Amino acid sequence: MKELSLKYGCNPNQKPSRIYMTEGELPIEVLNGRPGYINFLDALNGWQLVKELKEATGMPAATSFKHVSPAGAAIGLPLDDTLRKIYFVDDVQLPLSPIACAYARARGADRMSSYGDFIALSDTCDAATATLIKREVSDGIIAPDYTEEALQILREKRKGTYNVIKIDPDYRPAPIESKQVFGITFEQGRNEVKLNDPALFENVPTANKNFPEEAKRDLMIALITLKYTQSNSVCYVKDGQAIGIGAGQQSRIHCTRLAGNKADIWWLRQHPKVMNLPFVEKIRRADRDNTIDIYISDDYMDVLADGEWQKFFTEQPEPLTREEKKEWIAKNTGVALGSDAFFPFGDNIERAHKSGVEYVAQAGGSVRDDHVIETCDKYCIAMVFTGVRLFHH
Image (tube, rainbow, N blue to C red):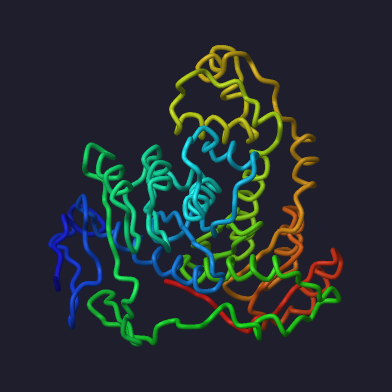
């Protein structure tokens, strides 16, 4: 198949719409549903991300994409009891395979942003992963293959319309890529930079030069995630998964703040008060996620006021105070931070430090590199200058 007609483009008024190959066959097969224009953008970007994560780490990988940027990305490390609970997979009877753990991490890190996502898996989708997916609001999935049981589960989702795409894992695109904007064709070489090269970690200008293997792994995950995130972008990673991604901001400090706030929310969801919220039975997953998000925020009275809390809880919870939040966030350590370009000011490091960042990978090359290095040294943060910029548009 060389061409696939789509319902419409980015918006319903943008017709006609299609995907096609100028040479050869399309490397994808639609097994179920009718994916749209944005679905395919998310699917193909997501597939590149997880494929590269798998190649770099040797572990199954998953990502949750929304509007051409990842909301989450992770490798398939096992889940402890806390993560199983905050990702709402502690009730699943099937053993969670590595690819299922990768998906649970990718989907669970930023559940608000992942609502209605497109999923990409590096490995065959199995029944455990499909079972997790079936319960979430999602537009579709792309993977190199599916077990028969997984395919049956996914085909039952969204009244049989869930988008399921199979991609040829051996497909390699041409080294030159092009796109049109306003009738003008842009052309460039594909970004084939390898982000698992040990040489990336050789230029360490900070006093602290210690990067444990887990930190290098997490920095690789951050950089690979940023390679497929709309710029400007910053990514916080801990224990093999992105915990905060700031995408598409015009200012780098706004990227750092946005991603840092998401990382803080991820950590706050593990606070005992949050984990023990007394939800009413059969509350919808989206309502529960939204309620937790508000409870953690400064607008907590929106769900705790009389007449409101009864909609969500069996009893009125105590607020999570600002002091309690600050104290809990201070306990988060060992976080890795990647940036798709240089940090122009030390304020980015100041903000990152508040969210437990101890390792940084950035391109370097700012006229104020000395100030950034000085700020890292202030907090004993180890920082590497990769010399690689990862803008993605």
